[in-house]
Image (tube, rainbow, N blue to C red; front, side, top):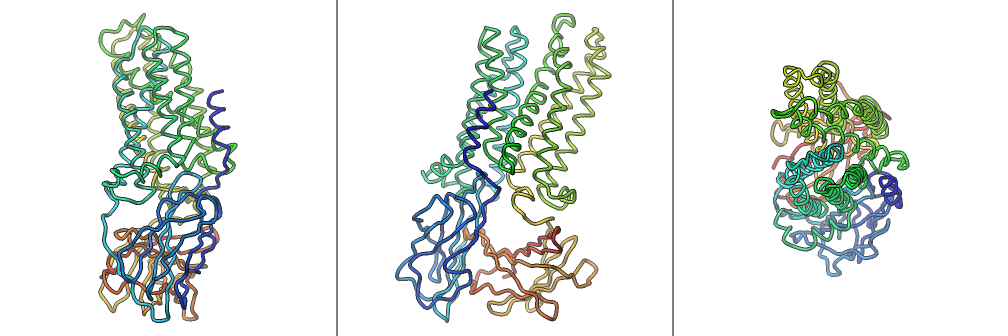
Length: 525
């Protein structure tokens, strides 16, 4: 009932994946006679603004404050005395699924628009690594504490004291993860944690619900570990299990996949059963350790063996349902970053299932009968299962950076890019399914697409994306049009005359109605 109530509370606001910019004024690439007083960005769903930066010909980038924010349309006042030249308005918003989405609107004032000077800033690699590590440790603490609480509720004499420090560690990680979320929302470096904007942005996001429910789950686990009454221990353990499931359903890609009346309960069931299974591994290892009497001390093992099979069945069924909601087609499993992470998770789950099957049908019955050799073998096997489970949580934490294909309608496949040759030779991008030769003439870009064998690649559409992470500039996207000679042409407007090496170039190639390929690389100086 607690999980159902939490789900109903979170269903109050519909979410349909990531937000998308549907229109802008000034129009992308527009050349205006005079500077506009305001820019208007319209999205397909209500969004919250986390960062707006205006980069002009006189540099550096400056933060600008929106008005009428909080809905689908955002109005951004612009400087009234803007000089003639090119401008980039970089925006970063939070969509309904709680994850940041960014882009850039480019326009120019005056026919002879000059170049934009890009200033360098710190790269976000350390921040992204900290986000991943914080989530990995947070998941590990949450699952371990919930599992310890369930075992304490079953056997009140076993106080599971080993889990109490993990409760405090998990609670301590919550503000760390909250601050990192704020930095990610605003696209700020680590020192920005000392200011209020990052914390305010994080508290205003749906991820704050996840952290809040996680805190309640940890506190409920602590209650189960401390109480001396069996009824109270069972109640606290059940609450901890339900709150853990609701916490991860409160934000993220999985819980916001349509239809949400199905996706959110599936997330709750998936996380709750995973926490019950993986969280029980450490208590089982302790249970099988030296000093336990087989007759009296292994009763929780028999209890675990009875209920784990239906719990794993629910885990697998809910996971399959979530995968069907997120993936467009089976090829997404190896052609998208999300699918690659899912494939790695599935491989680890298969390993866990194999170990669990060996434990149940080869070791459990002899161990319960008092065979010391079987008991030692079972303990070693569960230790291996624990290591695999910890690795699994680390892989799952990577999903923070890999939006699913269905909710993003994003690129299928990711290819590493490399640079060959020097100007005036074309800039080359290489992937396992497509190659691209890119040349630039003024504000126009020309792209020739081929397959890996060098044959012309016929595509239905092509989008060019330019971004400058060092300057905090989100991707600037332009649709290309195909020329009669088979090349693609796209106009981007003025770009920096110097420091061009800081810019990232991406090509989103729509091969057919169901297949898209992305190539990326850093432009040469």
